[in-house]
Image (tube, rainbow, N blue to C red):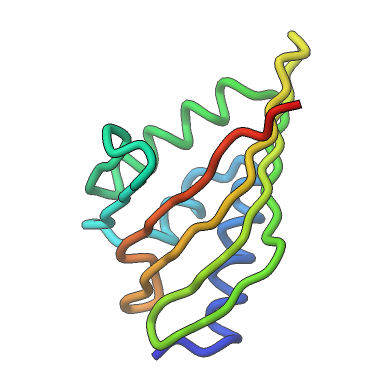
Length: 123
């Protein structure tokens, strides 16, 4: 069972790590056998903490600035439902805004699995 306080701590750690481009801290939020499922984009699904590191390293390299913010969250047993907004900017004016929901399963103080419904916002 995940408490509201533990959920807030995990989500805040994840958001702060993204905002600070702190790959080590970000990756530590995820279980070594983390399973990511993206139902709208099944080809993006993967397993493993190493892939988390590779994906976020690409994001950090691609965007000069990348910010994440948790809009709201709710906890049910060992699952956190969280609404996010991500904003990325670089010097080519190729900004991106992504919004959506991440449903994260917690095990032993880290994210064991996630179902991501994150999509770019069209202008």
